[in-house]
Length: 237
Picture 1 (cartoon, rainbow, N blue to C red):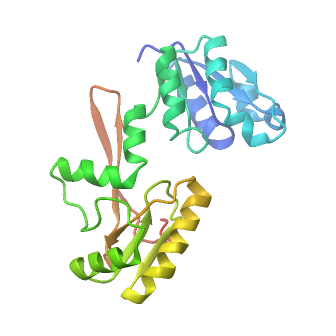
Picture 2 (cartoon, rainbow, N blue to C red):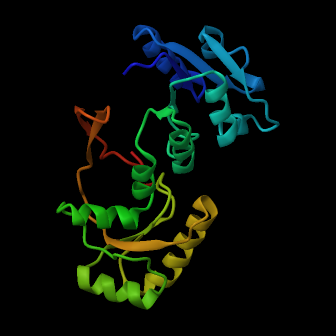
């Protein structure tokens, strides 16, 4: 990879795991931290620590410009986001790209695409991959949703176009359920993601949910085998 110093833009257990890997690879570990984490184990073990003090502890890890400035001030070659916080923030990745700093994760364009389920569906279909039958654009009318459901068959599921975590999803078994279900999903999506767009898709009952974790460096890619995720609660594994 050729990295001399990597900034860890996270805290706690995941920061410690990243730090340990950097040590094993002979790469210097820098880390940001808020006031509450100044004496934490990852901060104490890092080669260099950069304080970002905010009244709200979480804001220390969510201030995009502050994190980018930390990477520049510490002369880091790359930033590892861990998970959560800015890990899936396309604007953050774009800012790093503009500064010539490597983001250890997907490119900003990929995050933007996959962060919109409607666009992601279209991309998968364009690539010739099979997808569940559903709408190719946002649905806001119970009548339109009902007509689509008649075409693809009940049950169907309403999904928020943005975000994740099982938020903004509702299974529908009959036409008279759409009015309330649409409003419920739109309200939750707007509240959680600032985007009230939803779409309708065939709900596959009793499906087996299998994932493959992929690691790539821009040239080569490997996967770590199957991960069984069928046991779920509230649409989350």
